[in-house]
Every structure is written in structure tokens, then in C-alpha cells.
Length: 114
Length: 116
Image (cartoon, rainbow over all chains, first blue to last red; front, top):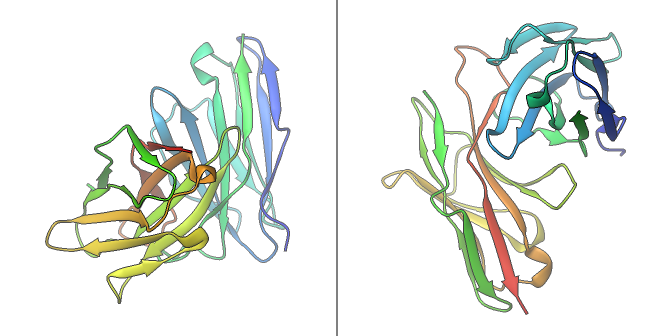
């Protein structure tokens, strides 16, 4: 079974631009979560989607948004990029938003903002 | 609020020796605890989880973890370390949102260095 895939793997943008990251969950998984990983802040939760609905959102500004499609694929968008948005963005999928379920992570998208 | 702490930034161990990576937790309600490993320029790989039942949980690649309720700990262990175990290890707890949620709260990570 294929794992979680994320595209693109690497991105370089300049301040003020916007970016869209894509995540395809494991087949049969309907829940997708996004995390930001930085050396200073560690791993922080961005948001969680299930059945095309955002179920939970982390403490990030409104420049960070996401959505989920009917096939469970998800995208996240960051508008008006800032230098501090440089990070590894990780997507994780699980079958359902059940607290006992295991989340499986993709390889991440490395975003660099210049 | 749910939280986990990894008190050691780095753990050094010689190949063939047992290893322990420490994690303590603070939760309201039942703890759902996870260990993940991250290799350079890679995502997180799931190792094991504790939901309920036996306090000793066995996972991937020969790793195991011991859940200790009285000490609120969930230490990761392996009887014999390999150089290839060198990586960044994260302990995580599932958040309690008042409903179903997948949100994980991660520790700061522990870098494991296994010397040949």
C-alpha cells in the first residue's frame, strides 16, 4: 500500500508570495492533518480535516488555510509569505479522527522563504 | 492541557548497548501515547503506541516502550542499539478536544547517536 505522498518536496518562494502544498493520504484514509516543523518551535499542529470539513485548527494566523477534497486529498495554502514560514510542512493521514488511531506521515514539503 | 516532555536533547550510546529515550506526559483523562522517529530530510515514521492494556508495548525495528502510570512516563527502549538507529525521536500524546481529533502534541525531540 502506498504511503502518504506530498508534493512538491521542495519549494523556494520570496516574501509576499503565496504557496499551495498538496497531500495525498493512504488509500482508505479519510482524515488528514497538517503540521509545521521548525528548529525553534518544533512540531506544531496546523489543522485537521475529515470528510471535507475542518475539525480542528492550531494557533496559526489566518494566512494559513487548507481544504480537503471528496477523494480525501488535501491542500494547504499560505498567503503573503513571511521569512518565518520557512519550515518543513508535514501531512499525516489516518482512517478516522479517532484518538486511538495511528497517523502516518508523509515525507514533507520543505518550504524556504527568501 | 495535554503535554509531553523529553528531558534529554541528545542520548549517546555505543552500538550493542541498550538504549533508553525518556518521555514523561501530563494529561487529563486516559493518555494515548506515541513514538515516532525521523531520519534526516524525511517525515516521521511510526514506531509504536500505547492506548490501553499491557504496559510494555512492542513496536517496529525492535523498539519497545514501557508505560508507567505512577511515574507518568513512556520511555522508549531497545535491548541492543544499532548505528542505523541514529535519528531524531519524538514522543507524542493525542490531544483531548472534547471530541474525536487526530491532533498530536509532540515533545521537543531527542537526538539519538549510536557510536560504532
